[in-house]
Image 1 (cartoon, helix red, strand yellow):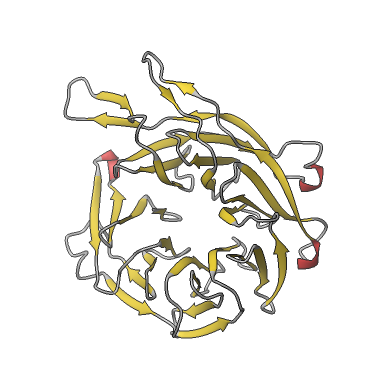
Image 2 (cartoon, rainbow, N blue to C red):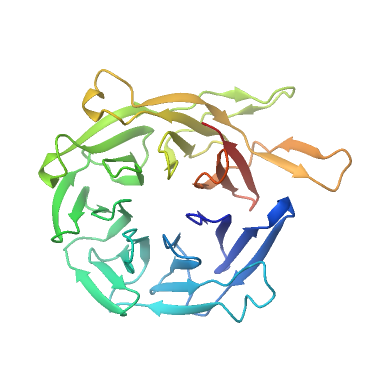
Length: 347
């Protein structure tokens, strides 16, 4: 699931290898929809919209990447205006993560594989490739910094690499012993990166101590994000606290709110973020919990409109935060029963 970086459009991947693209209509008149499918689009693992583009969507699949140019969902001729280019590289299969270079004018797409440690950087304009070959068992995720300079790659070997795109050199970063990265997201200023470890509830921070030199990168554990048990108001039901972090996302424009979902929990934890002075992390908390978010189901067919909490047995599987279009960011939550709920996040 992924929000478009500057339009009210959200893309969702279905387990049947189909992408649904929803665009919010004007005057709150609902959503229009485009369906994307292709024989090459098998075993979808990740999706990401291209920055500074009207409708370019990359879809990571088993054998390669489908790059869609999506037409306007609000028009009747969207099928005719939608096209796809397929990108693949020999031996680079089981795509685990993708990320666009956000630099203005760039058409680079970084791609990692779950089976080999080579990173492939595609130029989607010239259709050329640049493989960054490294030994190992594969990569888990890739995150391209908002300023375009840094690429963070988490491997299956218990290490991470911070690539500098100015000269395509990297610095190796050791994970805590015996752990590997589960989720990661950049701060909007590209000076720090929040991440969580598989099977753990701690939030870690990678940041630059004094400069933008890769040699100055530091790693700190800044928070233990175990949520409290909350009851549903007016009902004898409880949302379980959960255990390890499943996914964390940061507001892409301000970086002032962090949303976290947990394994075995129905709640979403929301935190206020203060990353202005990373050097003071030991004396000042970078994260402060605001509260928990519980999904709701809205039935517009009833009168009055029915608003109920999502069943406590339903668990969030993905979350995505939009940029701020008016007065708030919107948190989209995809549940394991295919329901998507939307929550405004007001600063």
